Amino acid sequence: MARRVSRILFPLLGVTAVAAAGLLIPNFLTAANLLNVVRQSSIIGICAVGMTVVIVVLGIDLSIAGLIALCPMVSGLLMLQGVPIVISIITGIIAGTGMGLFNGLMVAKLDVPPFITTLVIGQVSQGLALIMNNGRSIGGFPASYGYIGNGSVLGVPVSDLLMIMMMGIGIFITQLTPIGNRIYALGGNETVVRQEGINVDGLKLFVYAFSGFCASTAGILLSAQLDTVHPIQGDPYQLDTIAACVIGGVSLAGGEGRVALAVAGALIIGSLRNVLDLVGVHPFFQNVLVGTIIILVVFTSGLSRYRRTVAA
Image (cartoon, rainbow, N blue to C red; front, side, top):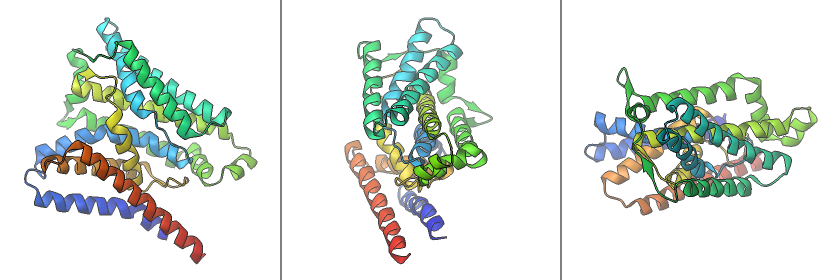
């Protein structure tokens, strides 16, 4: 019971804080601004779906910033060369999923720490994005591509629908399939899972490939929103994705976390950024604040686990 309460405590506190700020700040609670918040949060939310699954197995994925740049760069260059949009998008997503799979291979087969592996792959991905167009941005994509980022279906932005769809996929995998049960078991105790004959390496390959898939999808959506791709466009989303998962109650100690709450954490982070923008806080100071929030939440969660251990 205590664990369940602690898992939803930070999302509730985050919603309360954002709501209070919204009441005090003009224009925050307008329909147009709230739709803009959700639209901007969709990138973080999609990345948080994949990051949640990775953190649950006691991993981390620091390659998403690079993948958010690499995958749309691949797709964008193909579109500018006349390749059909669908094929271009699929190729970009395959590239990102493949990088995620490589992360999983290094972690599972060579036992390289996830922090090192994903950090290096992120740098490699960003380097490839820089090389592909000599460090320059590309843009001017077909209007149908821009519809993915800025269009709507029955009044609902496509970006919001994509985030909901990815959240649904994540919930289905983690809560409604045998793979999900094994993922949580792996995060709880890898030794026991191996002794039960479960393919641990296969699970690790899957979660990192899935995270790569989510980051690739987010990168495509971002480039469609902006009608451009920049080789370092993913940098702002790395910290916010981790913050969304932490605020959403995903335990960095592994074995705990829900996709839906991580997406809620993404909306909280998006709302927080929006509030800070409205009051004129510089983006550099915003990063300091978000980083501080992560530290406080992790410290509080660790203190709570320590108290439960002592009490037991």
